[in-house]
Length: 84
Image 1 (cartoon, rainbow, N blue to C red):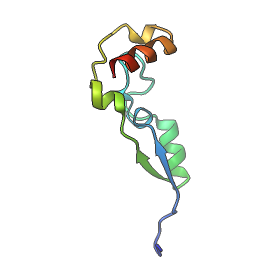
Image 2 (tube, one colour):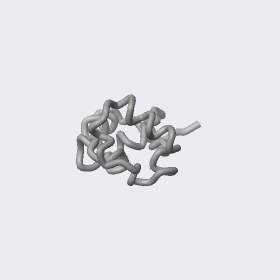
Image 3 (cartoon, helix red, strand yellow):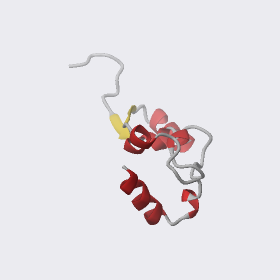
Image 4 (cartoon, rainbow, N blue to C red):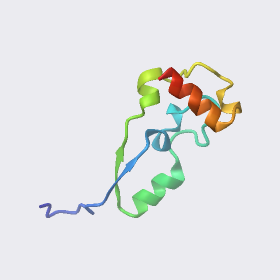
């Protein structure tokens, strides 16, 4: 099918892994993309498809609670699911 330099490998990655700026306030571990994941994919010559984020699409950057990152993950995820 393709007779060129493509690796023909592709991975679908969650939006928040590639763009830490899209996640809940107070939960980012990187200033932008997750460099470790991105570097591993680039080094392996794997194409990347960034999946859309339902939270970001529906709720935007302000998820309604600046204290959300201080709660247990399950509790915060349940709150966000109810908002969606």
